[in-house]
Length: 283
Ligand code: AMP
Ligand code: ZN
Ligand code: FE
Ligand code: FE
Image 1 (cartoon, rainbow, N blue to C red):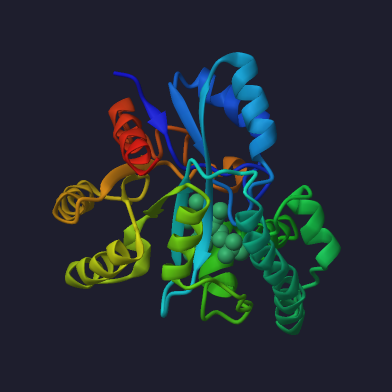
Image 2 (cartoon, rainbow, N blue to C red):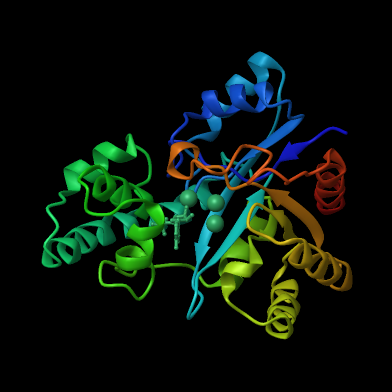
């Protein structure tokens, strides 16, 4: 069976592999196609496209947009976005600026907690792409303040913890519209992270379907078999195309392998074929 991975991060956001290295790893891992879905940026796509063409790997251009959702957080994936679309890049710039405004606030919070962490150190850890909380965590781990990513988030960086600082996000409705306006297919990412009951997820899907949502990320490293079957049922009910990916971040989430997640993830190529059908219907 041909396998794919439709969710991963490069150095353009908080992954540790460059876009080219990711494409190479997809090939070594025996995948037939890969989507690059960096947080709030399209900056990794030109390099990824170039490398994918050079070695003949199918690449789906993508993005993962952070949307406003209380009390948790919501991520919306956008596949086949037109990365030359001025409107999308402009709107993403607002998200990038809001990260830049947030980062000194996280630094101030960590300093207040007694940790010696500077913005320059965090930027260095980011390798020049979008700065995300995993980069703050990385510096804290390197300095011995915490043992690992989970401890950094659970104690300091997760929403509601003392290091956390808010940043501007689009509403789910606006994020979906933005992706559609750029010719993309909006997909609700890793629904379990919303922290909702299944009836509440169904209500949300009904609303987001009205906004223009087209897919639901059903296959995911951290989805149990039961979640997968429940989300498949919801996707069928709301006529959302089921997608899947590992959320590979390289060394920032070392236990997650490209295409395989924690080991049992398997996303067949037919998932991508169905996604392309939905795209073609919209053209
Ligand atoms: P940011 O872009 O700064 O909001 O950070 C988002 C990144 O942090 C995503 O890649 C998540 O995988 C990671 N992240 C968010 N919450 C946690 C958590 N509780 N534990 C580990 N990683 C997390
Ligand atoms: Zn990430
Ligand atoms: Fe995400
Ligand atoms: Fe992700």
